[in-house]
Length: 161
Image 1 (cartoon, one colour):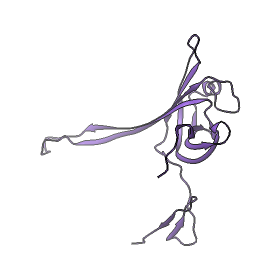
Image 2 (tube, helix red, strand yellow):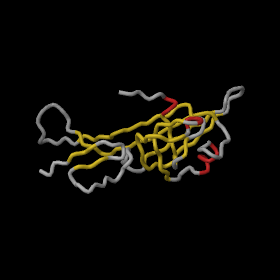
Image 3 (cartoon, helix red, strand yellow):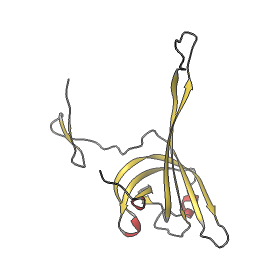
């Protein structure tokens, strides 16, 4: 099993990397609600899923980089729904998108900038998941409906029964 170094796992918004990022966090949460009745037996409460939510956060050093998602461009798009991807990156400034690990639509819900005297100015962007899709969907096509090959050459065998 290969490991992924932090500098090679980057957040992309609209296919463009988030500039000068120092850290990226994904939070997935499942909210439950008790649904017990007087008819239930046993000591444990019955729980049911109420909602599923996710958000991505990235923070980094404030830069002016119009070719990438810098703090100024993120501030101008607060409230917008965007396509986000958590992907492997390489190349110059680790900005060339490689394999996508997670993807979906999210709202740019928060952008904050902190400028402390005699320190680097930093920013944080929060993206709140808009849809429940956390992985990139790809269409599988094949002349044989029982043998499919994915884009990364994984073979899927379908049992018709």
